[in-house]
Amino acid sequence: MSAAAGTTLATPLVAPTAVPPVDRSAMDGYAVSGAGPWQLVGVVLAGSAQVLELADGQACTVVTGATVPAGTTEVLPDEEAHAEYDNVHVAHGHALRAGGRHIRRAGEECAAGEVLLPAGVRIEPSVLGLAAAVGLDRLTVIPKPRVAAFVTGDELVPRGASGPGRVRDAIGPMLPGLIERSGATCSGVTHLADSRQLLLDALAGCEAELILVSGSSAAGPADHLRAALSALGAVLVIDGVACRPGHPQALARLDDGRLVIGLPGNPLAALTAFLTLGVAVLHRLRGLPLPRLPVAPIPGGLAGHPTSTRLVPIRITPDGVVPVGHAGSAMLRGVAAADALAIIEPGPTTAIAARLLPLDSGAALWTF
Image (cartoon, rainbow, N blue to C red):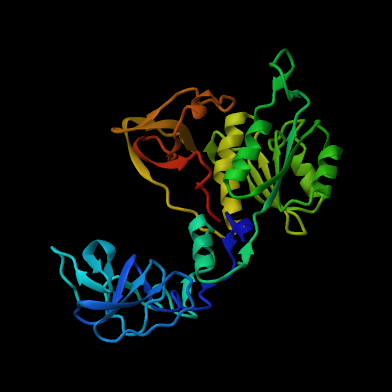
């Protein structure tokens, strides 16, 4: 069942039995019947199959989790009890309190057949613990989507420094972590030369549910994504988004249901496109809603773009958000030092507050 961690419940989590199935002690101490003092008549340990029934004036030793005998009116904790020979008294300074204290009643947490969680809940460790507590060994889940990535560009080098005509690939190293943090499985990052046929073959042969293609989503002579998608009969769902950086992004659906996202070739633009469009797609594939984005003040204000949404790397301070700079579409220095991206709505005004897009892939800007 541990393999279900991070996936999504495909069906409601229903308790097959009551929890607890019987009345159990919530403390180490003595199960007592009546007002006391009490005569000790036995011991019940956790897991014991021994069946006891207490008459008025009787008690037995119990441990946390042990089934309390029939006739128990209260569990008296060790620290409130004084035992001497075969008798138990309430210790000095304490008083007996009626009302079934320290007893976990049968069905107290849930009844048999009760719906504990609806479908669509992300399976956290606590959900796995709850499933085990009610006696389940398996869960029906929406599996993690498989995501493959193709990084295109004749100019890219996988190691070493940039040079004349050569650019160090910064997108490929980012994508596996972004994919995994978004609750998906990365099935690999492949570098491709700028070739329409190579890209066409890569897309046709990829079995992942979501395919990311970076560096080929614009309209330049080396950008072959749209031509390859057209050759495969794909439906272009999104063709560019009015945000900066990251506007030349795309979303397409192949005829077999696989999805393709085109990411810009500049590193910050590719990152913002993934955090906006990519995360939204993965949430949909996982059956999860997108969380609401927090809003924070901008003490110094941030100017909007005339027609596009701006995504600005910022730090969060006690007084509000502060831009960190170095926010060009090819730069990662600013976002690497940032806490989030401030979402500045388009228009001529200066924003004094903004929604914040987390950098941990836990939310997204676009919904569809």
